[in-house]
Amino acid sequence: MREAGQLDPFDDLDVLADQYARARSGADRRAGRRLRDDFVRDALPFAGRLARRYRGRGEPADDLEQVARLGLVKTIDRYDPERGSFTAYAILTITGEIKRHFRDHTWGVHVPRGQQDRVLEFVQARAVLTAELCRTPTVAELAARLGLEEAEVLGAQASAAAHSTESLNAPLGDHPNGAEVGDLFGAEDGELTLVDDRTTVENLLCELPARERRLLALRFWGNRSQVEIAEELGISQMHVSRLLSRTLSWLREAMLSDVTPPWTASGPPDHRVLVTAGADGVRAAVHGEIDRDNANQIRRELLSAAGSCGSGRTLVVDLSRVPLLSAAGIAMLNAVHEVARARLLTFRLTGVQPYVARVLVIAGLRNLLAE
Image (cartoon, rainbow, N blue to C red; front, side):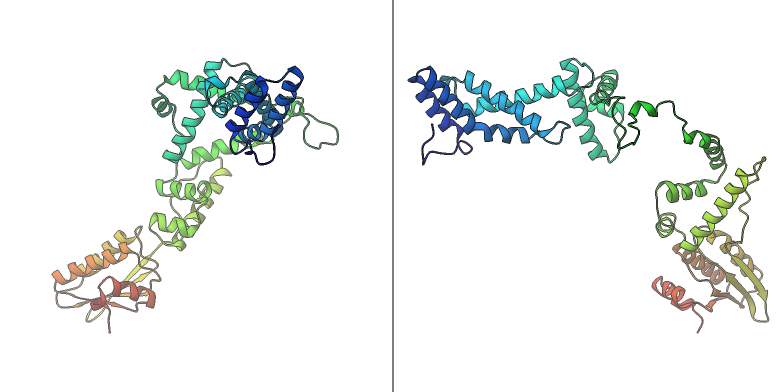
């Protein structure tokens, strides 16, 4: 039907349809059938393009293209040039056939058409809300978005789960004995042996302090590294390591004991403050990191040391054994300095390690460093 130089139907199907309609009007039955077959063959790429829009929805591409081609044949047989554009009519007919195929042939159980449409709206709304909220939306949020009752949303959710089913007689991979999926039902579940242990661990976790529970959650449920946990909690990585070791040791002991041992936070102390009095004043040597967890305790001990030092004397804080000083530690030292100045004491920091010294200089406490 198409001669050299004519437009490709993929570019302008309406031109080809108009030529077909005019040629068909004066042709006999045999010639009309040939013209129809030629038109169908020339328009097949258009049907294939519409079918490809629905790829990735669980149906084979060949099946979708076959449905689109049948829709194209229906379009050509029903086309009336007086009613408007052939392309617009073809799009409506072919896409309608494809959607009808999804409704009638892809559901595992029979679901009324109205419920099928509601399921499609539910699936789309759930995807949009999940992207907006960065979490799975609740039933109430879905109901508000769709303008439905919560019971209707639950019904759509149940129907969506019935869209795709799997046969119990489906082969189980490349099993040498030809096993089927149904053979898995009733088999021994190895996870059952862990039920008691999981229940025990859940109860023990409730007895831990809030910080230790959060630490375990970040490490084992959030897959966070010790460095990331340290930044989250505002403590050092070494402190995180100690807390994890201490907590896991307690859990291990509690799991193996008939009586739950008390949580005493046993283990090496996070810090020590050794105070010695001299002729010129008091010297307080701090051992260990100073962070948010122990800054208040160290402040109390240094203020106690300042209270034992008479006016006009010197309070020297030895930081030679302090490898790390957090923001809480800086605030603590500044508070002790203010109290010492109010009591007419000379306050000095000595033995400061290079890293800690840089932190103090950045914080504006250079004047406290002993020459």
